[in-house]
Image (cartoon, rainbow, N blue to C red):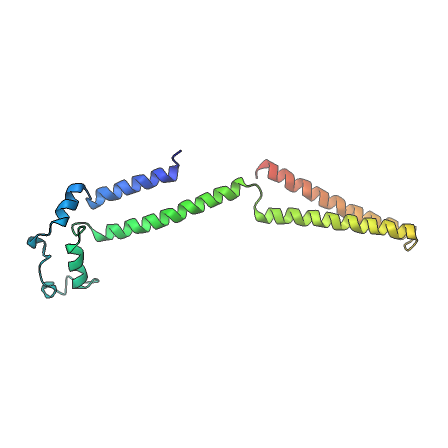
Length: 171
């Protein structure tokens, strides 16, 4: 299965090759160094006003290379496109993998936090009932705290249900 980003990169690379004029004939022609290309000129013969960024030696080495007839900045552009495309493709795949895995880490943390709180509240309620049986708390105090704990457990359960429904709904 060929993915869409791969197809886009094939089109970009083919377009780059067309723009740079790279073909088997141009490679063979570029490899055959001829004096009229200015390759055999000494470095001192390059006028300083034509050498803006690169040194004369650098330009001469480029012209002697098999790719001397190509535009060097297009090769820089291709390198940047390849690096950017690779980073974009990897980022897209990671994003898709995280999206398809269910809840992101934040929602998983909220879900586990709510479940822990529910267990903690249930433990407090069980501890309160044990204190009532031992006679350490009065019936009125038990009724008040029990009502509070049960209300908090109900709220946590409602939030858990909402979060699970949201997860199943895919929002």
